[in-house]
Amino acid sequence: MFIPLVDSLRCPNQHDETWLVASIDRAEERDIKQGLLGCPSCYAEYPIVDGIVRFDDAERAPFTAPDEREATRIAAALDLTDPRMTALLIGEWGAHAPLIRAMSPVQLLLVNPPAGVVSGDGVSIILATSAPLATASMDAIAIDAAVSDAVVARLSAALRGGRRMLGPVARAVPTFLKELVRDDEVWVAELEPGAVTSAPVLPTRRSRTENR
Image 1: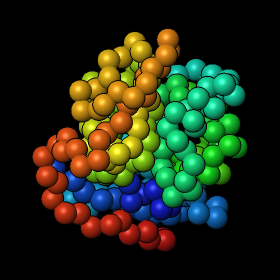
Image 2 (image 1 turned 60 degrees about the horizontal axis):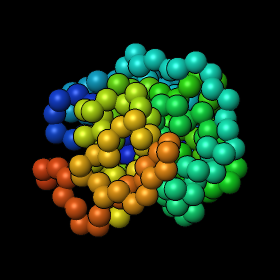
Image 3 (image 1 turned 30 degrees about the vertical axis):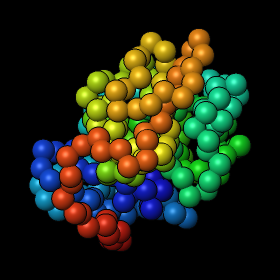
Image 4 (image 1 turned 180 degrees about the horizontal axis):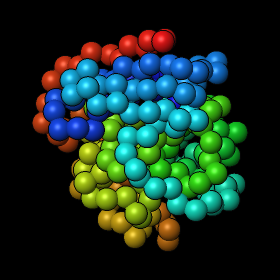
């Protein structure tokens, strides 16, 4: 888990949106390999094992080989050109993360990627059945056909205005997005700048990183 991305994560329990505090047991450069994320509101703890944050017992799909065509499609459709961006890839799209990183400077956050994808070198991984993300924390999102409607609804708050989401044609474009283009396999849509997709969120503090 890339240390600066801890600020983009939130406790998934039912209370006000709460930052998480990182306790690091082992790190390599700026990636946490072993440690813990703790919630100062409900005192829940989420382990980091081999660089992966485990929010719950979400399962990973079997290994899928990365595909250069799909990696290029994601990078181009989501306009992954700015190194300050963070892109969220959910489910099967995470299989292509290593190839995307080879062609794009953005940080990638993967939710439940297929087995075999590892954390590090610009790729961070969380396992979660929810979307434990801060409001307006993602610059691009790719969803697969298996993602739940509840998670898609939560992503409306996590996506920054003016940014894009990519999804399979098997899923309808979320109502909070404006469709830009589609082909026989995927659509690309945008959250219009200034769009209000959720109720106001109480101010939160930024996360603190503590060594122990």
